[in-house]
Image (cartoon, rainbow, N blue to C red; front, side, top):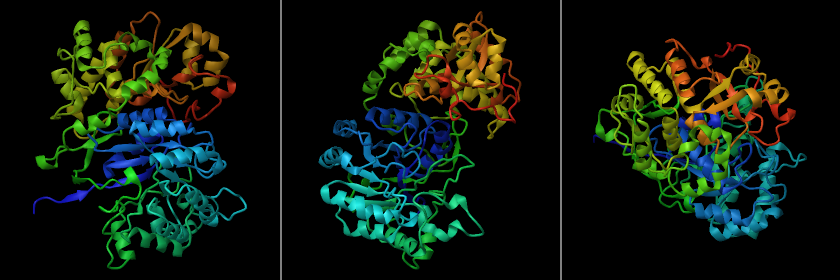
Length: 594
């Protein structure tokens, strides 16, 4: 035997968050799992199909190259979710469930359901269309003991709801008690449950071992040992009504984050816990898996991939290594490309009004061209687009990768592009809008790669960050530039807003930032350099990059919350700029920005 074939599991409950938080964890999830049910409790929550599809595009845009991973999207149920939105979700083919958070039960649940009776019309539509309801099953009554809230929710809310809608597909998320396991086991085939690694490996004693252990605290909270044993029994029973949902989520370093999903090597632990009874079916279930509709499709088989390597899309991204054995190499990119299609044009039509926003000014001359390689190449030929190595730039479909992305572009001029991907499309438009800057970024990457060897240096991190999220601040007013460097956002955008409008202009050239701007969030932050109003911006940016010293780091760029610019977001008042999540104060250890 010269090859072992393993199942790649699915994670039926994961929090990817958004922005930098998502970038920090997505590659890890994609390396472990083939698919994942992505939770919608962002801030603001994902309440519509259009928002879910935009979120999916952002996830796909952050994936490492050729990562065989498919995000399965969900909607956030509110008191006001209309039945028509369920129909739109079903028709999209991309939204696979609706998440019920009791208002106030957990992180970002303040917009959740306050009374289940307010959702009856929507639940009826979900029952008709076979759309699963994913339930955070805890009571929010403060009079109920925190260790009894799951049991109380089942008795007071979930049980009566399932009786009222007997065909509604329900997944009770991250169960923690024997009561929940027994309820799922004896209820109809339409009710299933996810279990986390955290609740299989620990009981509530872990919260107090050696003193208070806040990082073992998460919601739903750990329970007694008898409940942990019941979960292990359910997970190892082979019953396909129980499957894995890690509840993994990025948190700030100083948060009491819990340990959901942090210990995924469960097979040996559970084998020991159950004696000779092996975890034969795993959390994926088996061919009998039918209980939760499309969420329970049979497992796909894939080769075990080699260890990850750095990719070009993001300084933290990871791609699959090129194994010496061709049978172990990643497959063709066709599947990854197909995952990025769908009703993209329809979603762009929904956002067409957004293209009038000033953030798109730099690429506006090319926004109306046909979304095809032929149209992009016609524009590239008309503008004489070329790399610094003298190769004419041409946009091609992705193919076999023999060298790093930057070296391939520098040596051949061929920029691999999927026109149906917003991320790739904006990258191509930025090549057309900033040809010298893009060519200089590519040339610097190509020069650094042979010197670096396998370890990526700080200069290439800077280049990638500027390529993905770069901006140019056009300003001759030294006082305004000083406010940017010192992170004094209220002074800049509020108290000096008239001066900003008259003497400062933001030009965004980072293609990832432009992609994110289709669903604008106040916290989108670019990394910026400064230019004078008399400068040719493309030439000035290329010259600035060329003058960078060998040890330059991303700190040479100034953080810039671009949607703070007066008029770029609605309701900009002094309180808006005081929101520290979006307009952060300067870290005490930071050095002055360029």
